[in-house]
Image 1 (tube, rainbow over the protein chains, first blue to last red):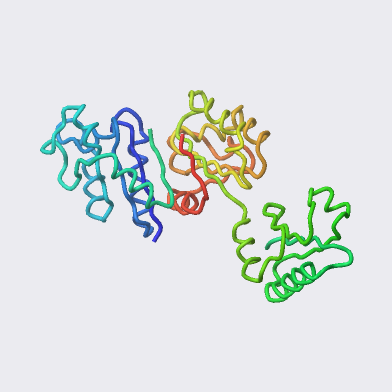
Image 2: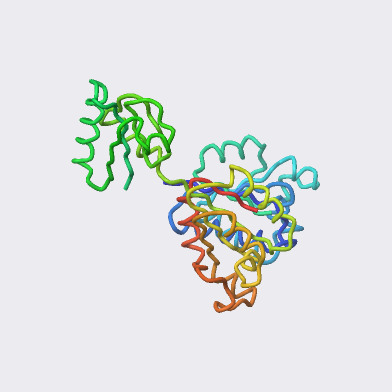
Length: 114
Length: 188
């Protein structure tokens, strides 16, 4: 099975690319690809329960997790935005950059959305 | 289909004969490939800078000096298959990202056998009739295709008749399938 990694660098409401990135992830998963999403820099706002998750992104993230998409978020970026584990939606661990390098290593294609 | 060009000495020595034998056997089992042979020192070999024989040139991309085995020929064909790059553009043409595109296209990194531009979000403006970046890309590169994702086209309020000729409108599912088969991708 081919693997697609999506790197999201933009915050949920600054650019529509965040929504597009999640749509691409879901579409790829529905088509049978193995999909991994890494939230980086402002992308770490996306699963923030108090500041990012409200609105359409909550459903998007929950659907993605339920359908087997692996989503992780950069711990350092989240920390710089004063987000701790409790602020982040369940199922999305805060991880290091090594996870991203592993994703890239395992992937056939990497797409970045800024 | 691959183009196999073999260069041999005249008269052919043992190695040249062996290479010809291997290639003929390969082509007889794989008739979809095109096979040509030339004498070393012929106009074609001079044009292609082939300076030793026996040699085999595949798709005018990979040159092997010496005798290629049957399996070796198969490997050369696989290694010389055309490479495809996919650019994923999400910003409108006025953005600074397009200066990066110009730099990439001006470098060897930007030259592939096939160049696909996938236009998402405001990237769809690139395919509109009056877009100078479209002209720049098509003037700079060979084998260029533009793909607009239907939903973003609607969101931008651009009609099909406003698009440059040859622009293909696809859905998100086809975008995913196409991007997964590209050898390289660049998202801007």
